[in-house]
Image (cartoon, rainbow, N blue to C red; front, side, top):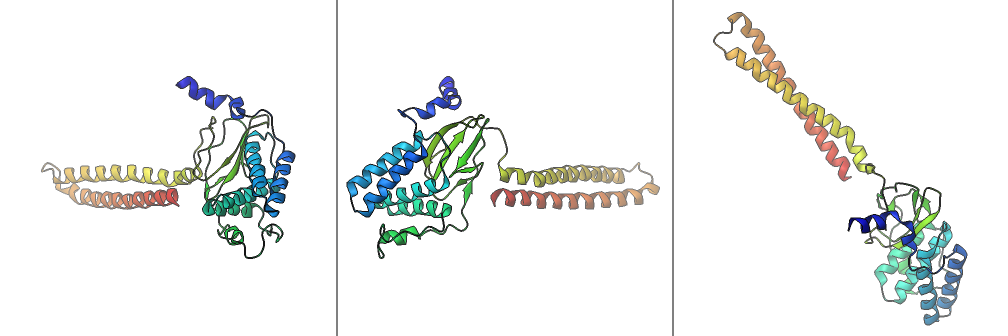
Length: 269
């Protein structure tokens, strides 16, 4: 089992299993053009064939896919979902397209006025997209929707690409929000939220240690104060030290609680 897992993570050639040949961005454009022509002509069979070909080509792309091709791919994935009576999936794919090309307007020749596709196309707000952190690979880099080292969109589909240390594309996949990332050997780094938590955690830890230490010292002074053998001349000083250390312990405890709360809030939001 361990050997199988290592093979999945370490052999980039496995990402291309099932691809008889690689696909270029130009070939992907041709499939999208065929899909657009067929949809405009209401030729559903040809539209389905063209989008099936688009879907089959995507995992075999071994170059950086241009932004406009990615936006168009999302758009026609949305139209295909609409044709398959998946309105929710259509809206998500349209949102992915609009997030990349917000200036694009559906031409009336493709989607006439009054067509429900237009409502779905504008249905999701893309102004403040949520993202999900993806660990960087041990070598090379990731791209989401063409952007290098970007974070993964959390609310709509994305085109995932992984490149090795030489800049060669070793994996391409069209991922929906619920899809797991393709397997790869990841670099051991902390997630951004975890990194932001570290100063709070450090302060909370130091304050906790300080609070426990000063409380222990205060307890020791109290024991000496209560000892019958302690000279009366030392009692006022011991009492003052006890009060000071107890107060310091309380203050440090409050700092620890505040910093701990700050760490939790930072980690959540």
